[in-house]
Image (cartoon, rainbow over all chains, first blue to last red):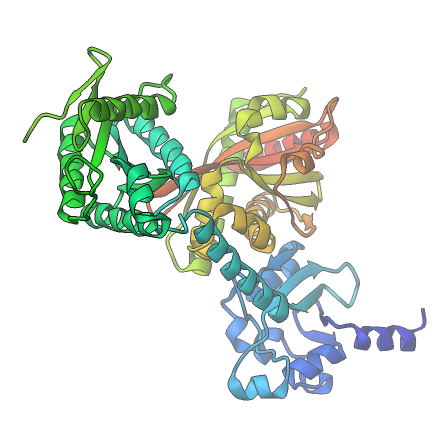
Length: 322
Length: 204
């Protein structure tokens, strides 16, 4: 390729090219550099890049050039860590607004008698903007995919993930983890009596009452399914778990939602409590099975009460009052 | 053949600690937060043992950056963070609201740059102390096990210097590995450099 053709090709590239000599002085830069820096080659030729752009002196780009000249090592400068190392602008209006181009820069040593270093600059402004938009979207989707659409609390997916994470942490830290399984009493007859829209509204109010009453940061409420909710309580022993369960039961009772077909006449909940310090071989659903057993026993015993699983007897017993 | 003397091992350890010390200063300045790096242990194994000895079960979640260096000896340098925590720290550096998965998808260039800073610092420390020159290529980032596996062929007879790397920031501490893949010839050239370096030290 003759020199004139090479020059034309380099000037048409949509990437910035800077060539430095062994002293770090500009030998050449292409038309892209001229367009985006507003500096023509004759004005910068023979000057060090640090003289043209003093701000890079003690910066990552300055070191990268130093490493290429002195050690013959290459560097990449990513926009996430160094968004705008050089004062380059996509359009004149961006310069007026002081909105710099986001840059991805490669610094590589060149083995030539006159030329020691090539710097390539890519304009990543548009891809970075797209990434930001995608990220915002993916965070929003992530949030939605873990949320129960009716009540706004965590959904089953959230619960499964929280359970496995908190269980692992409890194992590693030798700390207790408690689980409450909460079931709305006689919910089918509530639905039959008032209709499904009222049933939905009942679940929303119960979920809010439960959420309101959980004040500790790490406590996690999720809708387990149908009219069942689950609460994971990290660092909580059986005694405290029972106290919290009882508080939640009363919080729902205080809503005073009429429920004519129910024996009490009001919407109430039954709660099964289980807590353990898991040993290395225990699987997390053992905790769910224990809380389920306790919930079943609470319902058997007449509902609107809290039972807890007792590992000594492998049975459930009423939560101690208090 | 294929051995490092106690003296050579200690010297290499010191040289790499010099390198990661430089890298820590650069990284701290870049992210304006204190980052500490140390390389407390060094091992020598065959390349085909790397996957067995090093990667094991953690191999599924790793992020690695490779760079090729040429000079008195040629080497592929690999910086590998086998744990999810590693990505977590990187996401701390970059954008706290990102999950590690998003970081590895979106921030390959940034991962490259962090590896680049650490590996260049180590190689420039070696270059300074040995009084030699290396030519370093651009970094590449891999984050899936199948891609990474191709870096090691099964009957690979190359030597591997394994350096454990500890990186701490914000009271978190993560462990990575710096891997230097060397042909037998390159390994011997490295030993020659080390001996010359040690000889200079004892004379001085």
